[in-house]
Image 1 (cartoon, helix red, strand yellow):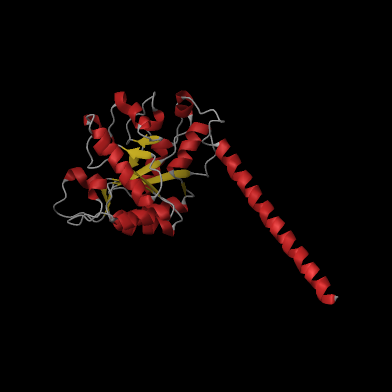
Image 2 (cartoon, one colour):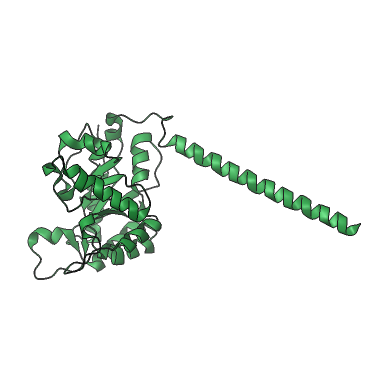
Amino acid sequence: MKSFLLYGVVSTLLLTSCLSSKASKEKAAVANTTETVKTDSPNTKPADNKTILARREVPVLCYHQIRNNIASDNKRVHDDIIAPDKFKGHMKMLADSGYHSILPDQLYNYLVYGVELPEKPIMITFDDTDEDQFTIGNTTLKKHGFKGVYFIMTVSIGRKGRINYMTKEQIKQLSDEGNTIASHTYDHKNFVQFTDEDWTTQIDAPTKKLEEITGKKVAYFAYPYGVFKASTLHKLKEHGFKAAFILSTARDENFPLYTIRRIIDPGRYTAKNLYYSINKSFNKTKS
């Protein structure tokens, strides 16, 4: 009799636990569905270009090579090189100043649907696939709880030489760790000079390759040299991109999502210089 009663009590507890677990999962599913509706959904009306342009810009930083200068470096590339100790110091400054890194999907949902961002948002991006972005950049970001955006030039994947480039495995690891992998063309061809064939070789083929590596959709693009051609911006959307990034020139009023501004953090900057540059470049609204 006691065994029967004990069995009944245990069964009841197990049933209650299962029902509670099921209810929790259903609640989470509802919450996730609600969040989807609130952000990127046909049920939510997207903002028009004027509204997008009027939203406060989010600081977006751009990095290329994280290494020390060498004698053969010419003056043109100096702004694209930042010493490892300076990069680490700049990331520490951002963390100490209360910045929170965001990724392109968060920025897109903020611009298009007004979804709230964390306090003092900032985006940290890397161009050209250099291996030091993985060995130094990613390691440093992780130390401060930051995530990054890596714009990959696919011709360079796995190449070794005076400059080493990331391997497929490293790119996959970045993606698996929650960073965003995005496109930077096949071989850095100037967007302004694109021919009809280039939309396959410089856009579609790199997108396919990166999606095969990461197992995730590639939805963002950065223009080589930061330059764009207004008359062909519409084609980026046709080829599957949600947004694209320039450098510090003015945004296009008809395509603000495809001309999101970034600034380079040059190697000559101190952490204080960078802090002032961020505030000067981005802490304003467009009327």
